Image (cartoon, rainbow, N blue to C red; front, side):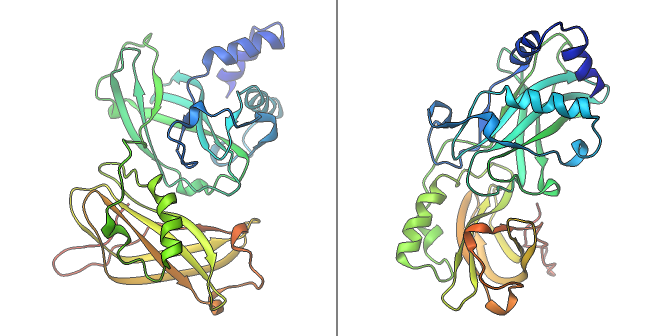
Length: 325
């Protein structure tokens, strides 16, 4: 961080000069599309940066000097407002380092729920529009981004990951590649959902239509909702997305549920049979969490977050058919 401090505070005579320098380094903010808006960046319904909490995790936690933390907070508070009910990726600084090209960005969650980002597909683009590097970053280990919270992240594109290394003076822009053209869910995706009513299917269909964007070459599982079950337990609705060119059979799915304070509410492991997702398609499935599996009483599903750790494929004589993320 010392180079960042030197660039922004070392030769500046006033905070206004620092503000101008910050604005100069800012790139475009990209949105994950969780709001359901076709073009969320055009929305006027926004949340001021100062209303968001800044959380330091990973390499940023307990490793910054007080003045460095103040700088990060200052940069964060100077950012333009974030679209309400969205999750944004806002690059605020980029620099060439020995290992590659480093981009610093804020992940901003302006929704009312914690958001767990499993994989984040990003790219570096030249001013001419040429993509010189692509990389999918695994953010599972950092945990969820809290509601109305921001988190600084480092995205390092190593030189060996570039398709072509441009000249050092060529500026590179960070681009989010996780929102391909929207397509409708096939009816087969809702043919069997393990217990959803017609009303629930209609409700979650609307949600899933904005989350169906499976990234080619990638497979992931995304929690759509947590709701009360009639038997007193919980039900977790999960969207399976298969971006591969082959049909997948999911055999094992672990689910971890936590409350707002990060306390474990339930940890369950499901073994599945015949849960197939066709190539390039998605499917919803309901996982029922029995009441006796809950570690607390009077649980409010709206205050809980469900995570899906990396599922493990079951080895079979003719090859694995499970999920490998």
